[in-house]
Image (cartoon, rainbow, N blue to C red):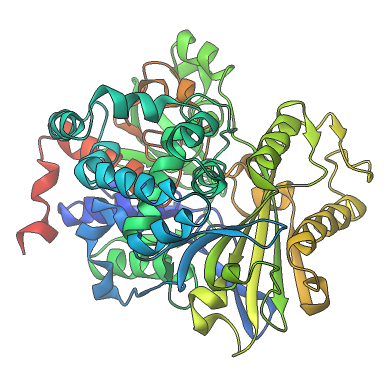
Length: 529
């Protein structure tokens, strides 16, 4: 009988399992899919000569994560690679806002849009330099972040205090208008905000856009050499080397609850796996509470709050094997690992407004990845392993385009949506479609079938909007990994601090379990050797 059972071998589940084995616990991880990784996987399914990341691809939060840093995954062979430029947002005119690896180069480029914007970027980065490390530490610890919060408060005072806090609460459109005279800085902030489900006019989107932009400036948008699965392999190898067990193809059907306490799990095959001390669930909140635990073990208030749980946007993704580089009209985009494809901030607003109305956007904002540019091992020299995803409504009411897409996602609708994304890229890179050797379509339903946490392609396990963050995540008053069931912990991105590959929800759950049993989580074996 293991001390702990972890449901799900996504990055958060694997981080939790690693921290528990470091503390001397015996741990068994059960994964429903035939391979581990959750949304951190790659394959050669588009073309045998091309490595394609199935879900996530760029990892600024992993690069900044103190959780992953403490695991020393480099010792397991993990290596990172960077594109020459972090990201680009081209315009149809040929102009391009570029987040470069070096801050002064970014500032100089933004100064070409408006001279004063070079200093504006420097000032923004100076504020980040004062508060960024403590902000990241505060984000990646259980809520409330007492120690890091105290340091963060001191840093905020030094960086402008209430004025900086006000900026972080602004809609990203307003933040861009206040900070930058030209379009360049505004494009970088707004495009980064839409990595989540935050419209340019949403309260707090300025803070998210600023965070992602500053992380890109300080840490880049790195990728694992050889594909996203290299990150998963490092976590799995570390776990197994330290005595943890992982079983794939083992779907958990329910959490065994006795006297209000989680005592193990039951698998779909009928096996009972008991746990001496804890069960940790790297699952969505609705799946954990409604499907695995059952309403009879939960307070009525939580069940009512779950009815108001909000998923983030659906996602539609296309992978390509390209015979050559992307022929961007703006040549500066060629060296960026990530490219934001939208016709300015107004294009982003139009896109988000259509989603808010339940419409399939007619000119979808595409977040485009140039993976061979970021990691030359991904495809043969002179070619490009590329992908793009766009967001869609969770519930489609109409199609703003001509294809009558309804969300059934049959073959016709999948092909039509993929063609629409390609047409959007073609507007900024004429000749792009002529370089496609092969493509793979991952519709929202496909993404969910490959990873059940991606509900209809929701990549953040719940909205990033302020009403479902911190003490409101996943429901009001549940901002910590503990659940109403004793010894059961929520260890997924459904818990604070939310989506992204950084391991914090898994680490927070592991620490809570260790603390519950009288063990100090910071004194685990890996930090004593």
